[in-house]
Amino acid sequence: MIACAPQVKTCIGMPNLSVRPDNLRDAFVAGLDWWRDAGVAEHVADEPHGWLKSREAPEKKPAAATESEPAPAPQAEQVFEKAGALKRFLGSESEGAHPGSPADWPGDLATWQKWWMESDLLDPPGAFPRVPPRGAEGAQVMLIVDQPREEDGDALLQGPAGTLAANMLRAMGIAQDARYFASALPRHNLRPDWQALATAGYGQLMVHHIALVQPKRVFACGDRVWSLLAHGTAQAPQSLTTIPLDSASIPVFAMPDLPTLLRSAPVRSQTWNRWLDWSDSPK
Image (tube, rainbow, N blue to C red; front, side, top):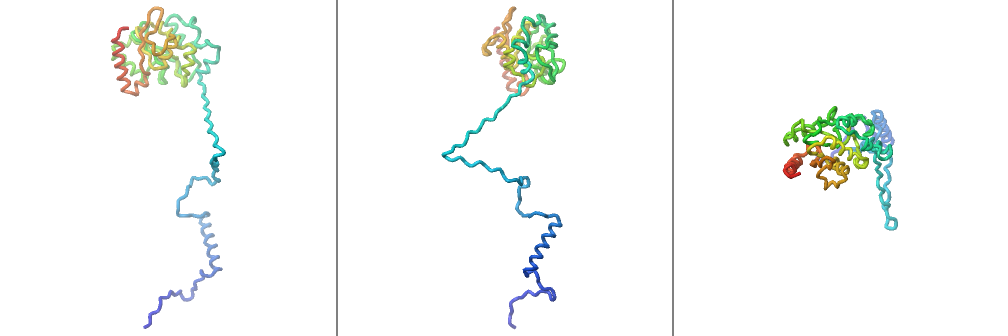
């Protein structure tokens, strides 16, 4: 037997018409119509594509600067600071209108506390209520914060900061009825301009408040309170050790603001050690 090369035979009566040019075209068109009817109207490939890319023409990048034509320097973005309500309030009247003239400030503590809650000279109406100070005249310690906290309602330092202050003063041996809590501003403000407040005379107003309370010592909580006291007493911040009054000079202890003490155990430890050294030193 003679071996023959294998051959592929088509079925009898079914010729392969796909190799004919006219049938190739018809088959291709029919295939496109079938896929279009199935809902596939675009070319689909196996490679992934960026589905979130815009079909718009990409923005042309600026041509690189040549040596003869240096690239323009980038323009600094202009930042416009929005003035807060308190800053606009301070600038709404002539200089010295807020918080009023020292000669017009109440001369006794009870009248001053009422004026603090009602006077239109202190600040504009705001979303937060005014919060009164609390304590009695002749307190052993007058603790001053920059402004009431958002959570303060009808009394100063009611939230976590107040709990920390109460525990700290108790550890220092200061009884509850020997404490006086005060703030530099009567209500919580979102963007106080502390430099403008110092220039307007809120440091002097704070010193006037201290003179009415007549405490044995003052605790200034935070740099803002410290700066206002220095401005109000015409002293450099680094030289401020006492509040000079007509009756006496009251020692002042500088400490971090209460939110900072709440966040940091090392700062609380440092403040406590500084307090021990300060309380042991002669005044």
